[in-house]
Length: 212
Image (cartoon, rainbow, N blue to C red; front, top):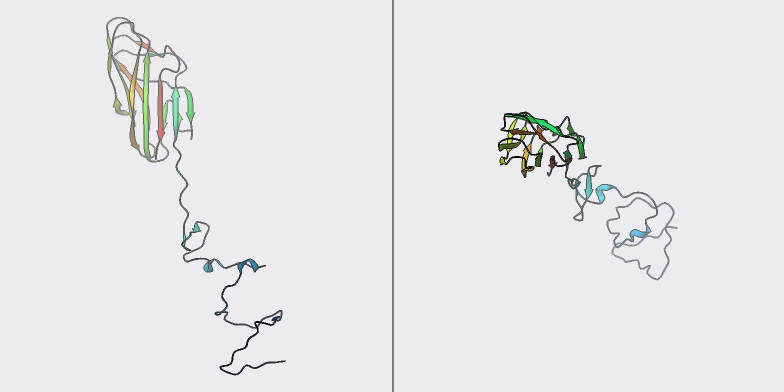
């Protein structure tokens, strides 16, 4: 049966039970309010109804009901810390590259052949130390240095007494590196004859860590 409600009249069914048919006729639903979302038993709410912006695999829905690009994950420092496994002779009055053949850590495999090569541009914390065995003869001037792309970039210096063992540190400093920039540890000693470093293994060290 069909019930027609005259224009201007109000139908009160608050005291009755309304059982709609299985298939409802199309309607705007604009006046349907206070609907209980827990009663949704099937289907999917379209992403456009949840918020403004573009919903995609690279965006997330924020509390202000807008889709925004997912923030990048927090950065974790990485790099390499290396040392020596044996003594090394340094020629007199010459720069010698330090052989660093024992790794404490090398996060991304960027350290090889006693050289650290940056694969990503960023700011890097660099430090080093050279340990000498105690030279014979006159006092000598020792200069450890970090080479960048084959040239001196950072250096320190100290004059030593005869037959005394010394450590020559290079203070930690933050430097910018571009992709494929490389760093090496060198040392110069002023005596005419060769001198030896690394009497104690692990006393000569070199560290490069990217901070950001």
